[in-house]
Image (cartoon, rainbow, N blue to C red; front, side, top):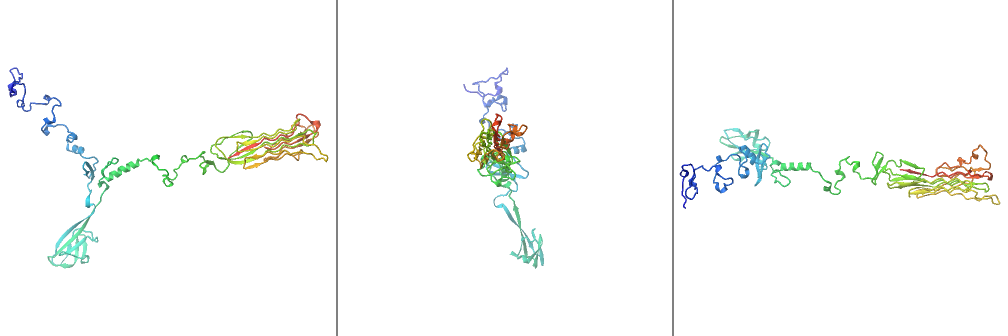
Length: 487
């Protein structure tokens, strides 16, 4: 069936219903102008091909820049949206090339105009009869800016006088009609600011001109922190370190820093003034390093020997010998050191007669000293000429020290032959007691004066008669040794 063109009016029936004749298709000619309103159009059904042009009056609201608009409803807002940021009063819009726009000083220059430019200014004077004073462009007197020409011939400076900064006087009057030209060179100095120098932004610097780029770099440098990994070995020299900035905590040293220590060349804190501390051991124990000590002086003395006793049946007896001594200055570790102090030798008593040997003293494995040998009793008998055979007890000996000393040997009985000496003094007194009297010190079987009272010294010897032999009767005992540690 062929389509039939009808107007809307032709389609309205008596009951107001629209009846579409023919094939039921409404042609463009069937629609009145402006009859298709917004409500008649299905959403998202107007394609680009359907739009021919739209009058500006038909658009309300704003059109984003991405769609060709300005994103604004006023010219001021539109410019703010379209132009780059960073505006400064007096700056002008510049470009660093396609797609690069920025604000810069209006005094910016480029090309051959950078530097000083000379602009020449001229005034042509026509002389009156006998005229000598003529006008000139403004110039600086004495600056060689003024040049004078008479009928095209340049004059020497001696031919005129610079009268003022706008006139000059010729030395000779000119005829009427003479052309006198005054020419002045004006200098214009153009200063190129860093803000006028174009800078191409990089991935690290976003500024478009040198001044802002420098400021950006300076800001980055002010926040720069150099990590240890960023320093080359041996990069921090003396010149790089500010005075008084190396604290004690920065020093790599052993020991403990304090007001009484100093830093040695081997990187160890040491007490100042040599040896200033001492610990005396009268019995065995342990020396503990305070923490900063690396060298000590040690004096080790062995115990003294006990004195010998005779019972009167023999004719000789021997006192105890002194203990030896070792003196050593040595470097030590920080670990504790074991200290041994030798005991004094026991006194010879009934019925054993022989005194005990003193004990060995030592300071770890660094040095040691043996004790004095104990004296013997009932040692000898008289020979036909009345001379008695006897053997002295040997003193102890030091070893391992810088200085090693031997203790004093024993002597025979009598007050003239006390116990053997140590480095600290003589030993106990020796005694002959045939018949001790009651109420006297000799009657006391303990006889304390025969015991050595000086560290490491030997005990005195005792000869007693056969009628005074008793279990409590004894010779003198040796004194214990001594260990002294100084640091």
